Length: 427
Image (tube, rainbow, N blue to C red):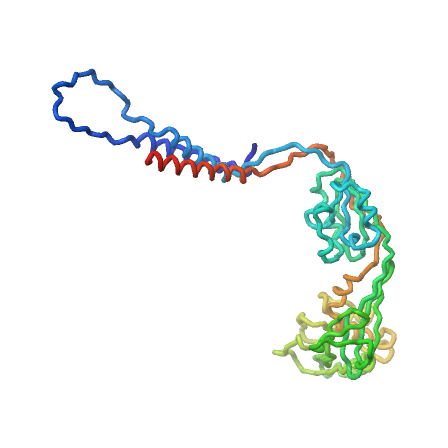
């Protein structure tokens, strides 16, 4: 037996307290009154110790109680040698929703089947019918597989592109990734925007090799759509999707007079975007930003030589760079972009200025997160392999079992016995 917190074993010194109490707690001398002592025979006095233990059973119970409390604080554990599994199968939860997987899973030993989620529960203990489908973070789960008590691991997975996050992990175990070809194709409606007389739809189509977005318009009075009672969602071909109102897109412009020529080109580009989107774009020019609520604007255009600060909206900043080979390049933050050259009738066409400004509008914010649910693109099994690190493996390992629950049970029994004996002996 071992202890998680052996320092608390010093509490065992507390057993001296009931011993001291019992040694000094002698029974009171009882005086018996008699009429005469004339007939009593004198006897030799005997010398006895002035300190004698009192109530041995109570003393033993109280010592055991204090000792058990000390053990509980120290965290008793029992080590037991167990043998590792020679082979463990880890199943991607995405495969549990694929038809035709049941015969394969039934052919594998149940005690070696685990699910690729936190804790790696056994397949028989995992309720996949009520669990939401999602792509695990494969490399993060590969690092956690190091804690599985097994020699080799075979991972059955879809190998979705969305499951690749972070750096390639290292592993001392033999992890073999097998990408199961499910030949699935998904099509889903992920966004709907109300226009004047129609509804703009954004759909996604994905298979093992590609992911594509499709835009289309449908009339509001079409028989193919159905509105819910609050009129904030529509149903098309069985799919319900939230409807967003097409509010005018607001663009804030901070521009100097020296760059008014460039500003005219930007305004012309936004008029082209407005016509393409069939959605109004409101341009507002201010000399400087003081207390404006920037969250209300879709884009900020900074055509000024004054010092620029990072703002929480997509921003195009004029920063000339003669060495740049593109008109618009990424800035120092995720939402900052630099305009590297002065605008003219040639570069706004060759560099596709309207398309660049359209990207800055972030019309479909949150769409990538929604699309990841339907993304069926896969990668090759070789891309999933972790970096192998040579490390000696032992077939045996020590399993720890917490004994605190049993100690609590014994302590409760002893406390009950102590109260019963105490009441009976009037102690």
